Length: 78
Image (cartoon, rainbow, N blue to C red):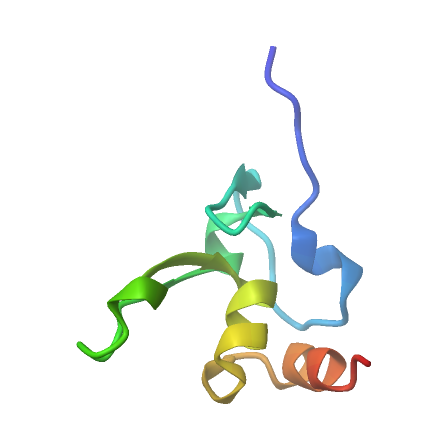
C-alpha cells in the first residue's frame, strides 16, 4: 500500500498543472514530475547539479523559474 503525498508546490501560488503522483525528491520535498526540475549545471557548479522540487529550484535559481506566479510568491518571502 503506497502512501500518497501532496506536491510541495501546493503551499504556494502557482499556475502550473499537476500530473502523476508526487515523489520524494533529493531536496526532501514531495513533487510530481512536472514540478521537478533537473539542474544540469554550467560546468563550474557540479555540487548544484541534480533534481529539485520547483520550490527549491526557484529559491536556488530564481532567474530560471518557469512560473512567474511562483517566483513572485517565493521572492516575496521574508
